[in-house]
Structure formats: C-alpha cells, structure tokens
Image (cartoon, rainbow over all chains, first blue to last red; front, side, top):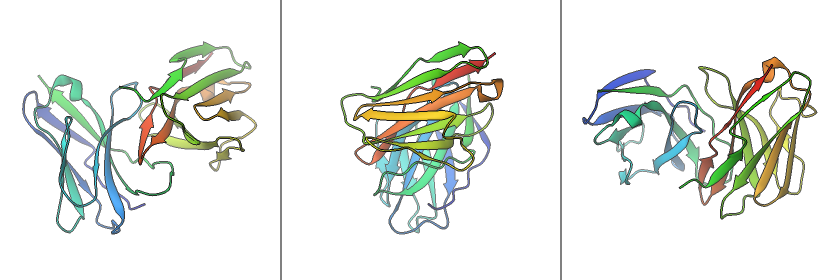
Length: 111
Length: 113
C-alpha cells in the first residue's frame, strides 16, 4: 500500500470547516483513499473512501486531486465531538488485508 | 450503528492470569478478523489475522503462544492473553470487513497489575 503523509496536528474553530490534507504521491491506479478517525479511547471509525471522484456522505466530503497524489477530508461544520485523530490510508480495494495506520492528524476543535 | 462489538470494554487482572477478549461481527459473517494493539500515544499495530476454521497468522514479534486466537464461528473471534504481565497492558482492538470496508470494534482496555 502506498505511504501517506499527514500533518501531526491541526486546530479548527467550532462551526467552521475542518480541512485535513493527506499526501499520497506514490498511489497506484487501483488504490483507494480511506479515511478513519479515532476518538480518544475508542476504536477507529470509518468516515469515507474514494478512488478518483470526489465523495460526500453524511459525515464528510473527500476531495481527491486530479493526479490523485493528494486528498483533503472536509468536515463542513466541525463540532467539539469531531476532536480526534484522523487517519488517511491508501489501499487496494480487493483482498481483505489489514490496514496499516500511520501517525494521523490530531484535530482539536476549539470552542 | 456499530457493526463490530467487543467484550469486555475494559478488564483489570492480576499478573500471571489469562484474559479472554471477544470480537463479534453483528449481522454479517466475517471469515477474517484482525486484532490490533495500541499503546498510549501510539498508533494501532496489527497483531494477528484471525481466520475462521484455520490457524491465525501472527505478525513478526507477536508471540502466538501468549496471544491465543480462536475463530470458531463466522461471527466470533476471541483473543486470549495468557499469563498476562504488566507490559501486556494496552488497548486491544478487533476489526472485520463488511463489503470492502474494514470496521473496527470499540476496543478493550486491558490493565495488568
């Protein structure tokens, strides 16, 4: 699976959009971008994934650049409950292998 | 809602005793489940892959005789920490695939005194 790079930490004001970047410059054509988050003392929570088109669900939006070398997870209206570590993971969407977690981005939503 | 459950959510045990942690897939079958471990301020590390009806596959450095994994049904995998020691204190998390997405349990906090 391709390596990803994320900033170690970010702050965001409550009610504002949180934009979390992820660099995956070595991504292969058949690799998807997955986002998970881990709230303190809980298991990781799936957020969203995509291949090359932008995706949106009830939790977030995923914007993938045209060259697919980077992506941005957008939480449109961050709340205090969105404070968590966010992980960007790249993987092939076939075969049921374990995920490899990096250090992620610690998002602190400020009141 | 949750698709993977774990029990117990936390456990405290004495050194030398064994502890069993259950991981269940809810409303779907999981022929493969994964067990991760997370120490404070660190990321998740894969311990082993649990395969229904066959032996688990352990990651390098994980003692298979200490961390016993049983995947006896399509919805249940168990991790038994045998002869637990304080250094085994950690957050243990299981996961399973539903469709092409891996879902994680809520985790089990193990504290060995």
